[in-house]
Image 1 (spheres, helix red, strand yellow):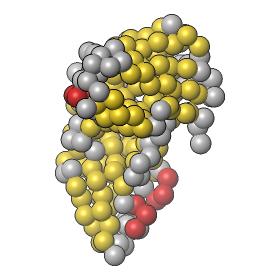
Image 2 (cartoon, rainbow over the protein chains, first blue to last red):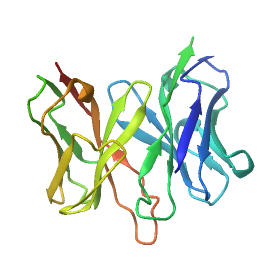
Image 3 (cartoon, helix red, strand yellow):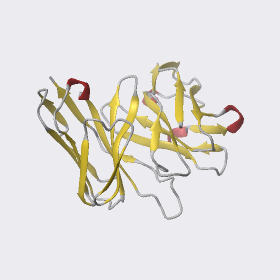
Image 4 (cartoon, rainbow over the protein chains, first blue to last red):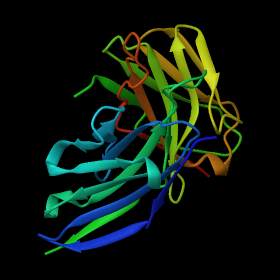
Amino acid sequence: AQSVTQLGSHVSVSEGALVLLRCNYSSSVPPYLFWYVQYPNQGLQLLLKYTSAATLVKGINGFEAEFKKSETSFHLTKPSAHMSDAAEYFCAVSERYGGSQGNLIFGKGTKLSVKP
Amino acid sequence: DAGITQSPRHKVTETGTPVTLRCHQTENHRYMYWYRQDPGHGLRLIHYSYGVKDTDKGEVSDGYSVSRSKTEDFLLTLESATSSQTSVYFCAISERLAGSNTGELFFGEGSRLTVL
């Protein structure tokens, strides 16, 4: 079965510093991978997704993620944190094949705090 | 923003009472989902629908039922609510394009349910 592990339930960075949120997946075949962001009292919105084109994926708000098959990772980065980046971030995986293809399995989330 | 409306947005109820949450979409998307979000667990899939009257179970379906009589509406019912079902419930929709199962999920604003 597929699964997603997000390392670190809370990450704190200073404004202007590098943001690195870690995600590792478990899957027998290369999956589709997603990062979603959730601002307080809101639903989730898509930041970016990997669907087997370029391994470096660029998303909204300056975020990007790199798919590394050898490391089974899909870490999210942003060169310079902004106060408005404070939110909870979820990594998700979806199967390419089978009856549940397209259904997303989410990690437990990482809360990002940005200090002034 | 995707046209997804969840109702009610907040509900407090007592153990043993029935509860129905409604998700209404104006996007005419084929796929609809119900997730629950709990601290430390991320989002977990309860049930999903791939068409009118076509539904299937997700990871945490026990104690929940769903119905979809129209494309635009997806109902989640707790027949007899328990305190363990206190959670934030999110509806999501997706239009998996022909030949692709990587359709982005669009989320509603969530329904916060408290079972006393």
